[in-house]
Length: 303
Image (cartoon, rainbow, N blue to C red; front, side):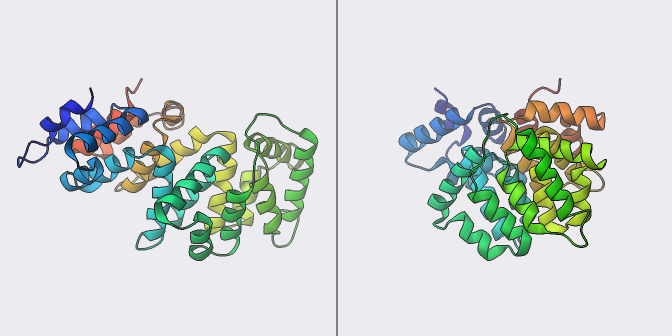
């Protein structure tokens, strides 16, 4: 019932009704999008993604093609594209890996291997280095609990370990940061952060900033912030991408498309609370055309 529109969207030899493409696809959930692709292939013996790629262009093409993938394949694709970009965009790859839950990571790893014929860990081993590489590999391979349970005694012990490995020490024991940040659940890491503040008066986030740098720092901070409030983290990423002169469209597309069906309602709330402006208004002012319409449709009503 959803695919009957496509002969109208791609009339033979007449180009593409882009507005209709945007309207239909932006209002279909992941199950419906998969169904549409299957039925399109059955009816027209043609891959819908290839057709969309040939009919669309620029930022809209990027956003729509990413949206058509299921979440795990999408994340795997974002990571691979980040590795393949002219200057390897480790920021994007690090963000995706370090902001996902253990169960999401398992699916990403499976999709990465089946889609690209190489293990995600193999690409990371080749394309990253130093403490950053060690953090990503540990985070990908360690089984973490996903529940809300917290061990207060362990949190105090870990906070003490991190203080000794960082602020109290001349230099930094990066291995201890990697071990704790990769092994503890989100709830446990949030408890460690709270214990750290109670015990030493400063924040664990500030300690990470002062003791580490570069992509390693970015990975640790992403893990830490997403353990406390993922929506707040992504609201800030979007704000950074749109503030000042110009817009970082790859980041805007990545965050909106990958979070729409996860926690966009909360991200919009955090954005409004922190920046006194709705995310919809920000996107409205920073984008244009069908690309703008598509992103705003994914965001839904601003209230």
